[in-house]
Image 1: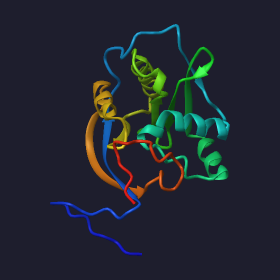
Image 2: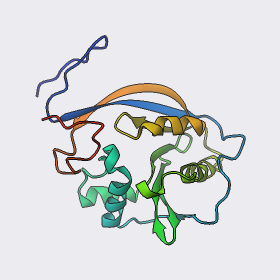
Image 3: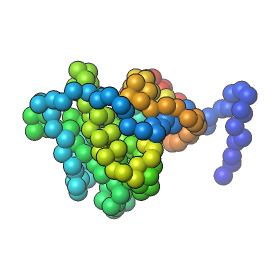
Length: 203
């Protein structure tokens, strides 16, 4: 298996069939002093204790397929079920009119430094302040636990260009940058070939 050194002062060619992202890591070291969003009567947050795999994958695609979310699509049923039922992992669903309109996943494997693992809304729910409301629920859950010292999240150039701006507006601060190279999930058949046109397929 050949490897290629990353040129830190110029360009590095990415092999065909691969996709590369610049990843930004962000952190929050204390709860916001002011409420992030007002309360709402049109939406509720429900804990998803044991996600059904088909329902989970469907929602995961709906939320993330335009942004090359593939991290959970590469797993077989057994691996994904084990992952989703880890004791430290908590999944939540924002519900409107009885239907999930997004996903919120928190990982408390390190209870002092939990991770906001997945956060997003289905396309039809974007706008109108629902994202800030959902983030407010996440922050309430995390910072209500006295052991929490730091909440962190990462986003990348495959994600919505608004994601980084949104996280910073919610109080997260960037602290690290990395480069991720992976198999293009569209070429693997995990996502449609026309998804995420802002990251062209190269083969």
